[in-house]
Image (tube, rainbow, N blue to C red; front, side, top):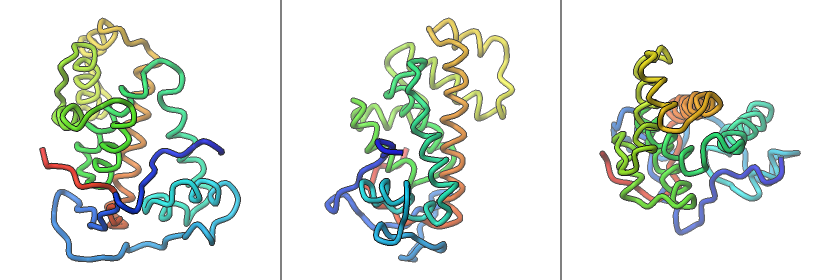
Amino acid sequence: MRGAVLFVATDESRTNTRTPPLRLASTASMPRLALVEPKDATGDAARILASAPINIYKGIAADPEVFTTFIAFMRSIGTSGAITKAEKELVMLLAAEDRHCAYCVAAHTRVAAGAGIDAGRALDARRAKASAPKEQALLDFTKAVMAKNGCVSDAELAAFRAAGFDDRAAIEVVAAITAMTFTALYNHVNETVVDFPAVPAV
């Protein structure tokens, strides 16, 4: 699992605010589920947490099998060339917004910056908007998949393909949405403390 780090948060970037499900504010300052500190982790989880001791990782690491499988799944998305790293992050930003996950939005705004997506472009993605036609087609397809529980129309799939995406790209979009659904649900149950810079609401 070496090299599977998705997020890296510095001390300066940690804001210690609560993930607000459905954008509701919370004054609580502790997560509701157990956390695993890097010094207490073993195996692959220990190596990942040593490089990225962020709150969502420390939480999911309470189940090492789920944690390492989750990391491998996340890492697999966007590595085939069907979608780029930047396109992956655009999908994840829109999915995070759709799932009302403040932690996910903050984290992926940070990760997206590393993929060349500036703050304005990230904010647009959360609104399902892009200036590039191919990226707009990607966001349109992502939005349709989420809105229709995958039951997109032939026309919607054709528009996605016409923009230059293939069937493998469609699978990766579904995978990215699935990953964001898992993390959003976990963060809502846990009320994960956000340790990334704050981002504006859409």
